[in-house]
Length: 216
Image (cartoon, rainbow, N blue to C red; front, side, top):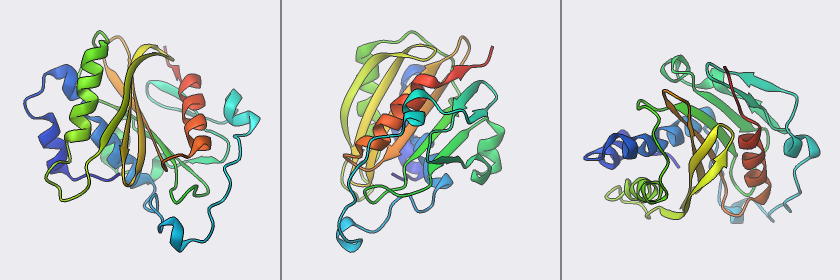
């Protein structure tokens, strides 16, 4: 789900600070692509029969012992994933970005999880604004000569640091589950990228999100 800078600028133009915060999920998607250049593998028809999806291990669901201690968060590393933060550009690492990638592809993709700071302050969560922001992100690639993205769901959920806007965006390249994490003075985004219908990667994403801890 790699986008160019132009698409990001178009999705952000004319939006207020709250909408811009969520539009920054585009940058998070770019970070995910950067930490795993093979995130999109050949189509299933070119790989042979699809492998069955197995349930995540108990460690992945309950929260693994391995963690990444970042600038503002302690993030568990799911079973079967590795810390790929060191592979990110220096600019992203300097802003505290955290990245993880699965060791093995699943359903034609290499699942990734990225946590990244946005340049705007935290604000009150609003369901209508959450949906509007998700639609803005999905529409941000118009004119890029590619199939459109679709906002499948946008809702306010109980996140690990309080109420959070969570958006699920579908594209031909896969799925992104984007969740805002609002600290008192700033907003972060956690983005999970994986193949459409990859139930294992989605469960791991949600279990990892639930286990994220803010550093006090």
